[in-house]
Image (cartoon, rainbow, N blue to C red; front, side, top):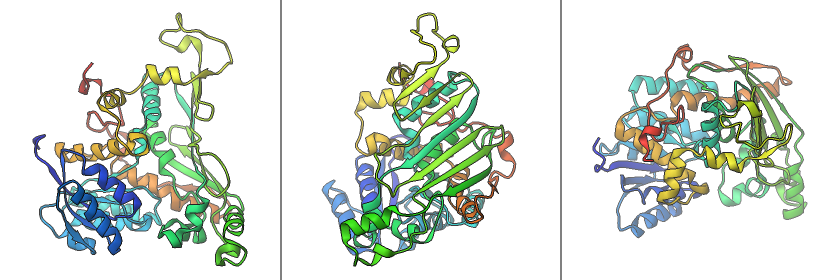
Length: 421
């Protein structure tokens, strides 16, 4: 597709997240918003207002299936509640549209398999909009790993560690969907922020795969305490039984022997952290503290590099030296709003995949396996932390699947040839 032809998109779901992504899309020269959809009138009106502020016009729908019936829309952005993402993406592909879904865990393995099979049958793409894969630090770590600085990977960690007590407890007042999940589920509810970059570094689905996982959940006390202190003892949720443990840990074993540790920690007081850790035979990086340790003799410039055995170094100097060319280019052009700029990049990656008619850098197999961790962890917790197998959604293809298409937004390799010096 020529670069000057605009791609016509529909946006489904106009809560706060959907409104924010819509505002980013409206500022992309390569995109035209043809239609928007939300069953709540005030959200639909707000979306229409955002479009009008740009001097544009879009059709409005309360029923997403009516939007999907339009022949002029090439792809849709899905920003609805977690448990509707897959259903809408499947309907979109069957209607001949490519789909990009906001993140969230799967409710069942069956919906993951349906997502994969529908994409294969319709030959339409699905991209999970995991923005953290495009964060500056995560991309610089991918660059370091692909350059061999960590040696052979052994163990990686990540966490969704974020104090969300107010957001969850006031879910009914704010029409936010998390509350019901915490009342009725117990597992790794939100795995993809931490797991996405880890999976790309480990080449999951392209020469490696997740084999088994084991999850353990603590007791649940944080939400009840926050509700009593902020809403009072008589508030109906003050004594509610929340199934979701305050801290859930999940350990995953990979086909080539690597281990991954995930932590879900959102209902206790704490500062934000993704709990990142990359550890290999040559060294280690830790997010908390912003530190790195690489054995001296394994560094390309070890003769010039200051070295103190068994002492951490600040990671910042490595981030600058190994900054991904995508971020160097992005900073020169001007970083856009949205979680430090990553929302713009992940949306551009999806748009570019449509323009070039190539599978997106986070494809349907990635989406299926990353999202499946939620329902698999629930199973493990419910069975007393028994190990459970992780399905191979590539049906054996992972053994020799090649890296995805080369380009600026590739998450398999660092493609320098697509950037100016």
